Image (cartoon, rainbow, N blue to C red; front, top):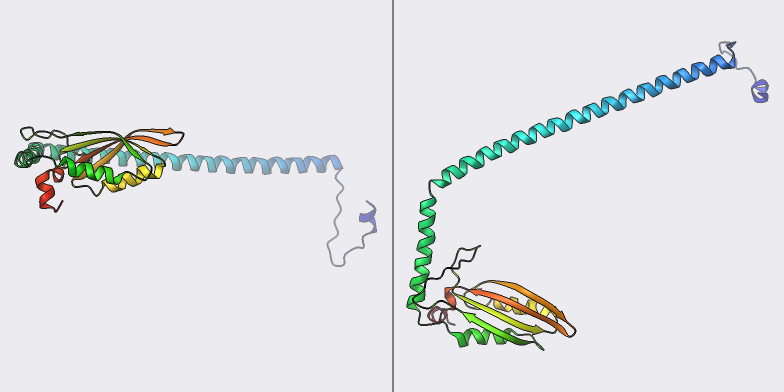
Length: 218
């Protein structure tokens, strides 16, 4: 109050006087505060309504796109079903060609394959067990590699010990260079105090046969 009384009048200003009691002034300020709060609440509600409407619009659009994609997929499957017999004939032809290849080949060159396996063992590692299997010349291969569709002729199941995990990785990388390599799986892995024991299943195609290996310079 002392500061207000000591202020000098400003020249050229319109004289003003507020004769309202402080209680009335407080009521006016409270009313203005309520109006501002109501306006802010209204803006928040409008923003929420617009957001909800936008989400619903996106939902309806996504559902429409999903139904359209389903209809297109159904049409594609219906068209493909007309050629299912051709696909079966192609698969059967692949198996028959593999059977002919197996029948023409004398045998699997096990010594050549075993040499590859032993050469791939890392330093400090050793082979714990080795199981090799292949169909006879009178049998048709029934296992097909899922990614390429090529028949699996030879399966090598190798149990090995390696001092480091990287040693097993190098073994698998070396296996990619073997004749007829198709894929490899780590079916079991156990960590020991001095290294790792792993069981690997390596699948090979027709190039693993002795005749195919000789043709390819194996």
